[in-house]
Length: 87
Image 1 (tube, rainbow, N blue to C red):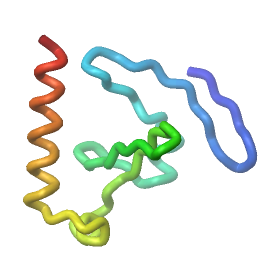
Image 2 (cartoon, rainbow, N blue to C red):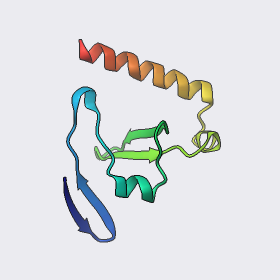
Image 3 (cartoon, rainbow, N blue to C red):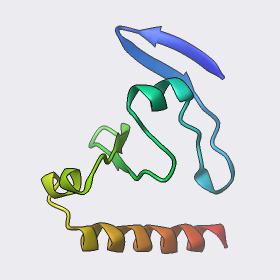
């Protein structure tokens, strides 16, 4: 794994594995209290930048204007898309 630092931010090069999985380095997981089984929102802005945002609680989902049912529906739909791409 390669590490580089720039203006207070950590940049880490990770390899995309089978089924699109990546590993979040321990340093970053510890800093952001990311634990096994936790959900993370993956988003892309208009400029094409991909962002990973840990969801700390159900309240964090509510602040994003998502209900738990909407979030679960999104997860199910995303998984169906993943399964289609794997065929």
